[in-house]
Structure formats: structure tokens, C-alpha cells
Image (spheres, rainbow, N blue to C red):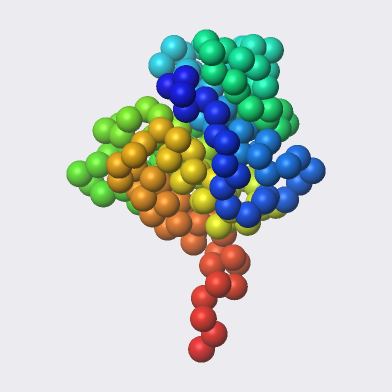
Length: 174
């Protein structure tokens, strides 16, 4: 997983806010990793956030350079996803095929989906296509198979429910 600890490309359009797009992308990637760590080891979101801020974000670890990240976005994602995990899981499970329940997905894929859904639900300042593109980019950092396409499909489907005003704007006029 250390090789995926840095995301050198700025995926999608820049999201709203003061931090450069690359720092927001790094925050999203780091949030997924922090949530993965929480999922595997349990513990407190605050402690994992502190560990990442003090020892990982913008630092070299095990020979890998972690990019500087938008710390406020990183904190908001980890705290928000950890606090609303069950609610996010129910939202995601509602669009997954019966043959692929959420608990059947790999932990890192669950974290990517949780972060994406949280951002779609709680960050209206970030356009839905940008959020979706960002999390497809995170999936690309971990997977070379069909998983990035699945992330795209799930988040696109959920964006229509979570952001109906954006979906209507994109829909053709009749």
C-alpha cells in the first residue's frame, strides 16, 4: 500500500475551496488510507487523524514521499465518514447488486465508496462530477482492474439521488 501513498496527478477539475487541487486529491487519498487503517485495527478516528497529520502527510515514510494534503479536508473526511459509517453503508448497499453486498467488497474499496458518498452528501461546494472523478482517481491508485469503473458507476448513480439539482441541470431540456 505504500506505493499508493502518493497521487501525483490532479484528477478532474479543481474543487471549490482555497487549497490547490493536488492538496485536495492528496487529502482524499490519505483519508481513504486512514479509514482503511481504522477499519482493520479499530480505534479512535481522532488518534488516526493525529498519526497521519504528525507522521504521514507531507512526509517521507518507508522510502515513499507522501504529498502535502489539505489538512482540513482530510480531517473532515475521516471524522465525517467514521461518524456516519452505518448511514453511508446503507446508502451504498442500496445500489449494489444483491450478488455483491457491501461486506463482500475489499476494505479499501469500501473506504473509497464511503468517502465519495460522504463528499457527495456533505460537500455541495464540490461539484458531483469532480468528486466522482477524484474517487475514481483514488481507485486507480489501488486497482488496475474493474474497480475504478465500479466506483464511477456507484457514485454516479448515487449522485443523482444526493444531488438532484445537479442531475437536473445536466439533463437535456425537453
